[in-house]
Amino acid sequence: MTAPATHETEDATPFTARRAPGCPFDPPPAHRALLPDGDRPAAPPTRVRLWDDSTAWLVARHNDQVALLRDERISADSRRPGYPSVSEASLATRAHNRTFITMDEPEHNEERLRFTGAFTVRRIEGLRPRVTALVDGLLDAMAAAGPPADLVQAFALPLPSLVICELLGVPYADHGFFQRCSRVLIDMRSTPEQALDASQELVDYLTGLLAAKQRNPADDLLSRLATEYVATGIATRDECAKQARLLLIAGHETTANMIALGTCALLRHPEQLAAVRDGDEQQVAGSVEELLRYLTIVHLGRRRTALADIEVGGVTIRAGDGVICANDLANRDPEVFPDPDRLDVGRPARRHLAFGSGPHQCLGQNLARLELRLAYPALLRRFPGLRLDQEFAEIAFRDEMLVYGVHALPVAW
Ligand code: HEM
Image 1: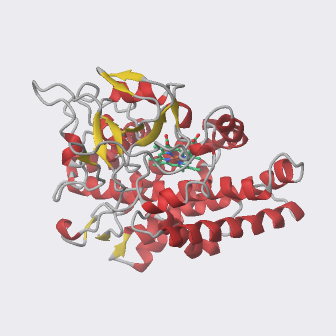
Image 2: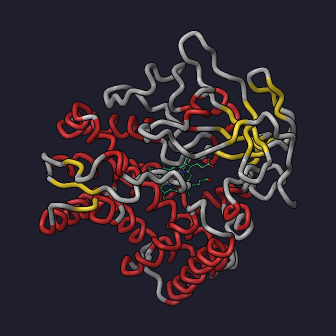
């Protein structure tokens, strides 16, 4: 498996993560144009040109994406030549960062199954009292220290970081370190050296923790990995450290950005904010699905390689071609979500692809849902006068990060 395949690129649209100025909640306009609009039908899969001049097929329609992501003729293995990498750093770290998120069956499921028990609806529901206490504690501290506050640092980032630390058995005191490394890894501007260093630092750190847990197990996921997999020879400590790194990063970066960007979107739509603030549990749960749909923070598409020729929307995707299932576009497909650019927390949004689809669908979605369902209403009820403490146009959105959101969200109340 060598360098990525390059194809003829002349008429391919450049692939971008950049949303339009003034429309930071909407997908990039050039991609958005592939969706149906009025009498115009959806475009078939379209060639896009990536940062390294290779090309991949961008798939816009919701139904095509669901079919492709569940198709056994599609591979998630980022080491394949046609795989569409989104930056030089992610290309350079693909072997080093190999975990089940970029594995195919049966290897993928074998590894994923080590964790599914910890993320079932029932197990996650059991965390409700603890997550509620963490939410309340953080909001108490925010109230005591402010106004103003940066919502990212005061609430959005610490909450999921604390939760995933407790689940894994990682000391929260080290959050400065692991949050910094994660940021480097998901920043498309990082150099390959910076990304490789950050990746190795995290693996070294987690390897040390696994060794300590093997000697002294506790009731957490790292201890389970150390005693059930490393100590028994089923997996190496390095493999387990890499899996733990995936959970640690995915467990905090994503939900943190949903909390902050979701709050920002609600502050721009006061009637929707009021519905979340005043809603009952079921209404809040529906609102969370709509915010996930509307914002699609894991926004660079689900990237794959075709293993065989596949017909999609009248186009033949050839074996070896890269495929990008643009889940941000699927979530704005008017065939599935009428009036898709409207944030409407009352709509049924459950078919969104914010957590992906198929075998790689988000392992942590139940946890993310619990945190979001508790975080938004608690924040809005505690601070009924919450408002942006910065011009909307001045807010720094995360176009250059693999996980979209805001770098900071200055608020007052
Ligand atoms: C996979 C989104 C929270 C762990 C995914 C995928 C998406 C996603 C789109 C699919 C990747 C693909 O198809 O290539 C999100 C969003 C979240 C969130 C939007 C929050 C709002 C979490 C949390 C965890 C987590 C809290 C906790 C550990 C994972 C893992 C995978 C994954 C391990 C890989 C699953 C596999 O390959 O089998 N996530 N995620 N995520 N997510 Fe999440």
